[in-house]
Image (cartoon, rainbow, N blue to C red; front, side):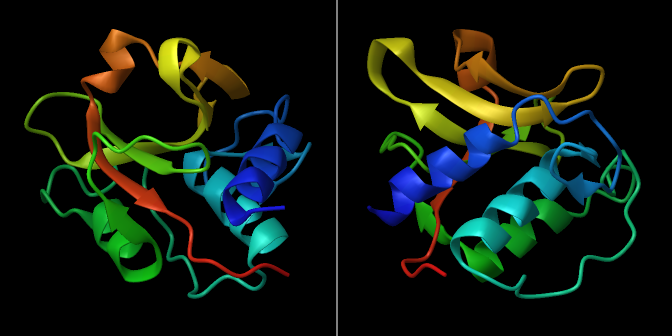
Length: 147
């Protein structure tokens, strides 16, 4: 099984987990970063660095790209147009704002979709519709290597 398929399978196992800011426990509670952390643990192993306490605004007032910088440290950058299942997508929720939401691409093509933890919804698989697609700020793949 490829790393990408393991990532998608692991992400889908989190569907139905309630939303919990700073959580990262499948079926108990998670936010979008917690989902990525959990998938990393399932596919790669131990988390590569401790996650500091963070607010829901993700350092937006200070305009610090905390999430994007961390992704660049541990994931493999890809061109946004090179969609593949298992990719980590970072989103800017408003034009000109910092990237503060993420998800994992679960399908490509005409039925493109992604798994993410969304306030008020928990972990869901959503269509990667035009409104979501135009918010993609960066695309990454997981490093190869599994548990």
